[in-house]
Length: 110
Image (cartoon, rainbow, N blue to C red; front, top):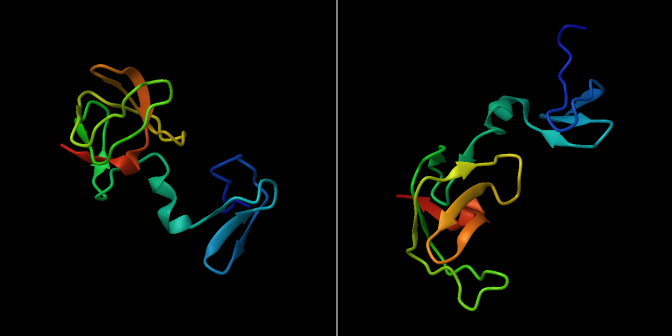
């Protein structure tokens, strides 16, 4: 039983192989075991890997709830912090807006 593959989402040992994917029978999460090391990595819109402390540039106007204006495309954001377990996986501070979370699909590495 040493070759048991644990579910990366819930940690369950009750997983099985289906086609070329692994499936968890507890939470029904599906993943490719060949790409198992990519869960903690965050990539920008161009596929470049991001790291804590990087600078990024916003690639599209992003509306901000409660703000009268959006974050404009071309805004440079310095010293980002990554949260790979979240949907908005970049924490940052933007001048004029303060602390906020961004999705990595709307930024590119500077």
